[in-house]
Length: 152
Image (tube, rainbow, N blue to C red; front, top):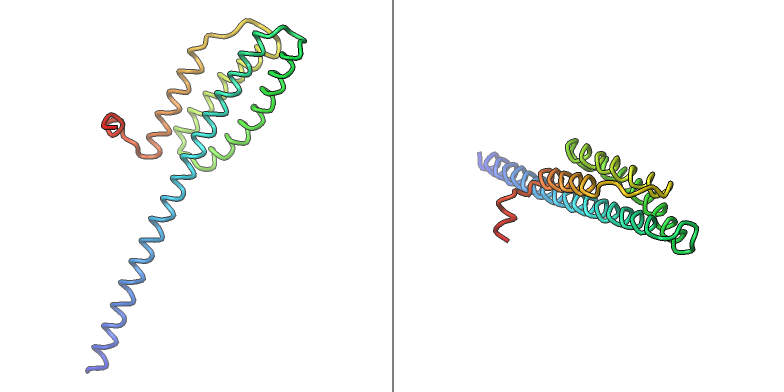
């Protein structure tokens, strides 16, 4: 009978430690993925802003000048980076955030098209509105409530 008590105690102890370790591991993994998501969201938005800025500057520079060529090269390089970052975002983000990022892409592509053809700039608010929506969806995905931001 004593041996049975020792076995039950050992089994109970083993199971409780195993469950606690599993829960700890799951929390660690969730935190790690949330940090990766946050980093991806930030990198993508920063890259979009860099590409949009290069696009704007390329339109202001004299077409064919060295300055124009430098801004165009920066814009194209940034667009390649943005594309890769978007792929990472698709792998990590929730569908509403992915859709918002896609809408940002569409607005940015319009800006790039205009920069490549040296046409007049688009309405600036379109990209900014879509970026604001993207930020809202990213916060929702990360579980950041609006009221918690006001306390800061």
